[in-house]
Length: 128
Image 1 (cartoon, rainbow, N blue to C red):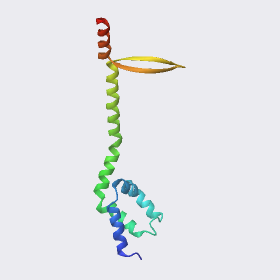
Image 2 (image 1 turned 90 degrees about the vertical axis):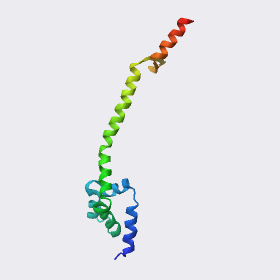
Image 3 (image 1 turned 90 degrees about the horizontal axis):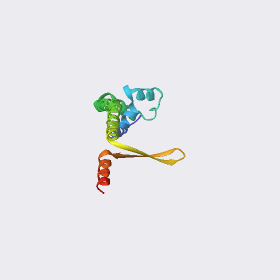
Image 4 (image 1 turned 180 degrees about the vertical axis):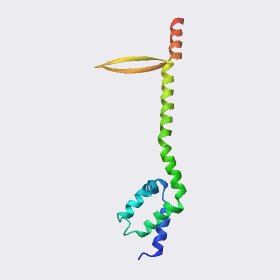
């Protein structure tokens, strides 16, 4: 039988654990935790099983739910960031002149020059 202080140490360890690590040990809808209990992973560590079960069902339940919601929204945030970056690059190309310099063997180097700089250079050339 495991003494009570072992449970206390495991409870403190789970309480101080980062939410990403805890979510990885418990899983979505507690599937990792249930699978590990069913497979006897915690046979030698009943205190850790007790602490993780308690965290999943009581003490850190709201924190885990909030992390899960943020994790599921993550692809949408990445999509919005990529869209904004792509639109900024398209806007830069719309108001620019693109020069391609041949480097040989089919390779080219692309130069994107803002139209204002091209116009200013043309003006300077005309003045000279």
